[in-house]
Amino acid sequence: MAVTTIVAGCDLSPPSDAALDRTVAIAELHKAKIIIVHAQADDAPIAEIDNEMLAQLGEVSAAVRVVEARGLAERMAAIQTRGLEVEVVSRVGPPGEVLSAVATERDAELIIIGTHGHTGITRFLLGSTASSTIRHAACDVLVCRGDGKTPFQRPLIATDFSPASAKALTHTSAVCAPGVTIHVIHAWQLPAGSWGASLLGQARFPWNTVRDAVLDSAKAQADKLSAEHAALGHPIRVELVQGPPASVITEAAEKEGHDLIAVGAHGHRGVRRLLLGSVAESTIRHSPCSVLVVHGGPVGEPAAT
View 1 (cartoon, rainbow, N blue to C red):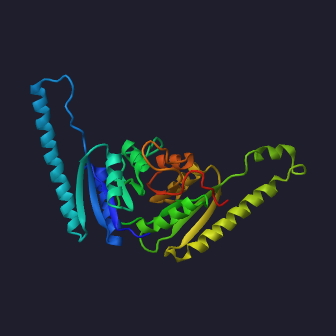
View 2: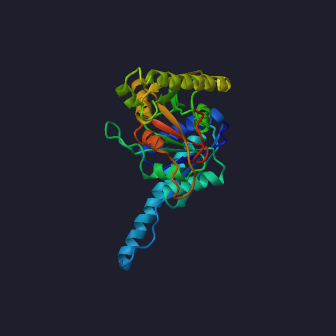
C-alpha cells in the first residue's frame, strides 16, 4: 500500500499530540504529506441572550481561536523541521465529518486520530469522534492509544480469511516498522449446535470429525494466506485459536503485548450507515492498544471459509 497523504486529527490535547507523533513516524517511512486537521466548535449565537453576554462570549471565542492557531502553527513548524511536507486545515463542524471530508478531498490513504478512551477493565477505546470518523471515512482510520514515536513494532491482524481481512494485512505493513513480524490470528468455533453432539455420544454423532474438518479448512486458508503474502516484506505468523473472535483477539493483544490490532471492516461507508460488524465493533471498542480499521468490501461479501 502506497501512502502519499495522511490526515491527522488535532484537538491540541495530549492524546492528539501522541497520535501526531505516530503520524510523523509513519509519514517518514513513506515521505508522505501530513495534513493537520482541526475541527472548530460552532460558535453560532445562543437564542435568548442579551447583547452584553453575547459580546463577552465573542471575546472568549476570539481568544480561544488565537490560542488554537498558535498551537497548530507550533505543531506544523515542528513537523517541518523533520523535512516533511505539512499543511494545516481548520474548519467549523463535527470532528468526524470534518476529518473525513478533508481526507476525501485530498485523496488521503489514511486518517490518524488519538483517543481519550479509558484503559483497564472498564476501558472503552472509541469516543464519539473516533466512532464518527470510522463511520464516515472513505479510507483507513488509525485510532492511536498511548505514546509512540515510531512505526508499530508488534502488529496483530484479526482475520476471518475474507478479502477485507486480507486487505487489512496488506495495509498494516504500511504503518509498521520494516521487517517486523506480523501476527495473524483466526478465532475459530464449531458450527452452531455442535455442543449438543456430545450429549448424543461419539457413536451416534462423531463430533470430532466436525472439529477436524473445521480445523483442516482453517489451516488450509492459513497456509494460503501466508503464501499469498510472502512478498510483503514481513514475516507472517498465523495462529488458530478456538473461541469467540472479539475476546480471542483482545486477549491475545494483552497477553503478547501487541501495540496494534488491525481489523478489516465489512459494510457500506457514508453518513448514517453502519460500518462495523459486531465482532469488529467489539474488538475496536475494547482493544488494549491502537487499532487500524481497514475498509473492506460491501455488506454480504462472503468469507473464504
